[in-house]
Length: 278
Figure 1 (cartoon, rainbow, N blue to C red):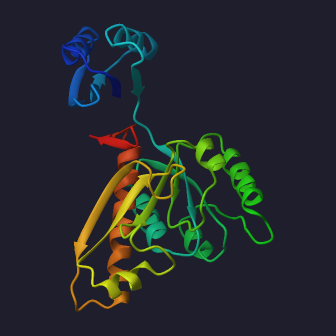
Figure 2: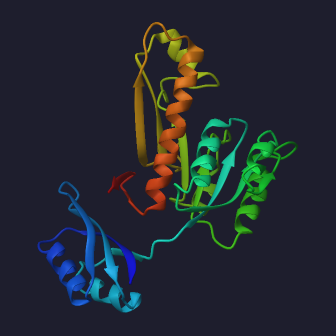
Figure 3: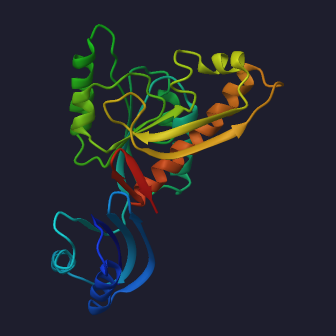
């Protein structure tokens, strides 16, 4: 027996859950879990089911497409580890958290490599027996550097997601389009109120009471892609800016790993620059 994740994105209409469930039943599939959501404002229907049984995937998909509205999107996925590439610069906290969770078997992922424009984190990554590839941006313009990164990523047989673990370079539209809805980023939630090299110092100077982080898919609007996960913690007047920075880094790494886990488990639907997550 095998498990399958069935993901449906369709225009809403009456009886969809019944129709799809009937196909599950007719194919002798047991429903292990099921979640659905209707966005009434946009008349959109989303459904994620985990079923157990044995099927011919193509015939099964054709059966489901037969009861769905036109222009529906359907995925039938057999759970397995996805291939990811991590990109980093100099900061260790977000990268290190993913590496530790991967080593502990908490992520359904194969980390193909860590790519960085500096070699600072190489010794840490090699302790986990993961390839570390330095592609320096020195003496290269942005397009030249990105071409080298794209060539490196495309050298792998398949890459499901690219994770920006505090990768501190702005990506061009060409790069984003090449890996549309595959790039996951993390940033502090002070943006856009506190922009620049030291947002925690700016936040301290303003006397903020909460700090947080946002993980999102990357699009061509800086830090405005579809949000996957967010978290905040409370701070007070006793926190110095370095205390805020340490707390902020803790939030960043947890939120990034949470977002990655959701993506690896096929729990995210992206539409209208936002997400539905089951």
